[in-house]
Length: 160
Ligand SMILES: [Zn+2]
Ligand SMILES: [Zn+2]
Image (cartoon, rainbow, N blue to C red; front, top):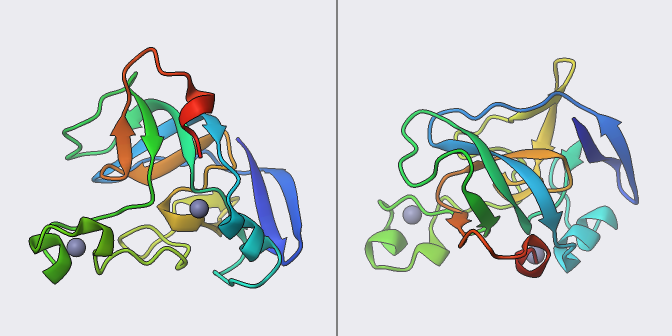
């Protein structure tokens, strides 16, 4: 699939990388729209430094094409918008009803929640920004930040 990969600060290029597959608790989306946020720009300019290489983008919207084991709220064909709020339902903040402060929410590690990467190019790991990496044709994201949309919502209006 095509993805915009950042391999050095200040530079981003379209590359052909491997299409990702969802693992347990994850969904794969075909992206249809994405926002471009000030955080993406701060990373591109090197002010914030997640590990490289990385696919940026964390305000994507698209259609679910595959779900991993254990996913219960989404099925292929669902249209979703992705937030960056990941919650575990177990930590101090989640139990208090404040999932936006979840202790697992480490948005600049470049990995998925299990600490591994989902993107690659010929065996070379490529990181994902904020569990999402929406500057690509497909993304694998955890189930919880993918929010189901009514079927007639225009994607361009919800991304970003
Ligand atoms: Zn943002
Ligand atoms: Zn939590």
